[in-house]
Image (cartoon, helix red, strand yellow):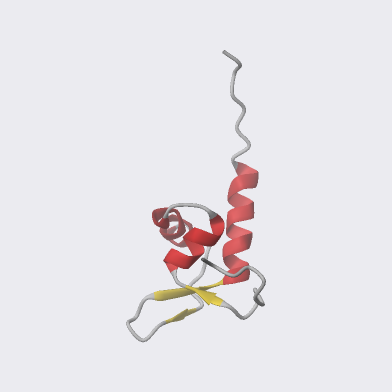
Amino acid sequence: MVDLAEDLETTLWTAEQAAEAAQVKRNVVDNWRYRGKLEVAKRDHRGRPLYRAIDVVRAEKATRGRARRTYALA
């Protein structure tokens, strides 16, 4: 489980941790990166991307804000 009480400015998350925190699937985090909504802050010792927690929160907020969908009542 991701601890959201941490300092979001300095905390780095893997894509899996970012997805868990944003309550999305892992591929959504990759899509944010490919679309330029989320930047890689650093790479771990295996070369996997790490993301600043605050950037993940901002990408998630922006995505949910743009997705204001309305559904017709049945």
